[in-house]
Length: 113
Length: 137
Ligand SMILES: Nc1ncnc2c1ncn2[C@@H]1O[C@H](COP(=O)(O)OP(=O)(O)O)[C@@H](O)[C@H]1O
Ligand SMILES: [Mg+2]
Image (cartoon, rainbow over all chains, first blue to last red; front, side, top):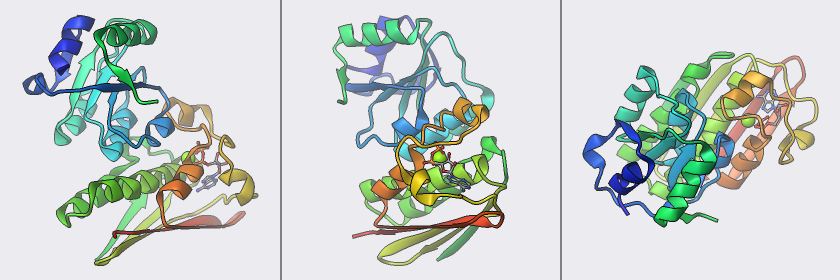
């Protein structure tokens, strides 16, 4: 599926990376724990409730490009600037972590583990 | 090639700047992406520790054709029991560290998993030095 499919399924807004909507994605990983994200061997879509500069730094280090923030959390200007440097896509879902993950599962996104 | 960075206690906004800059350098040097990820993940965890658990310090990086050496040396308070700290799940992190997405006691074990050589030395009241090496090939 593409990022566009994710955005449509979640009725989400795109905070950054509008031009990358046709990027193909397959796997997702959900966590608020950045140390956990730093153990991933792969580069899935990250679903998280942690919305601060460290989220973006962690993605930079772990080479993750797509983040879905849950519960209507909005990235700050600082976060967007940093994410822009790394060509990332930032999506804001209005739903809870649980519902967001459920909808992505329904869409056919696969778990890493 | 030698690089130096300063990290400041509690400066979470800038946590990862050194690692990010090292990442850019290694990219320019065409280091294999998997190896690059191991390097920056380990350095980032060490950098966060110097900011979260210590009074700040220095990051020293030396890159040659076949490996990278990284030293994160902080100004204390030191680690009383290194073996305890190296165990997964062991942490003394304050709530503000947990708010940043760290503090699950996974940092030191993850450094160990990602680097080819890890040496942690510490003296209580003086400081902690984390030395790491990753071979490029
Ligand atoms: N540079 C340091 N200075 C003082 N204590 C440290 C340092 N690095 C690690 N520690 C101690 O070791 C523990 C485990 O570190 P780590 O594995 O990175 O997990 P975390 O950072 O999530 O607590 C820390 O909670 C802290 O007590
Ligand atoms: Mg740590």
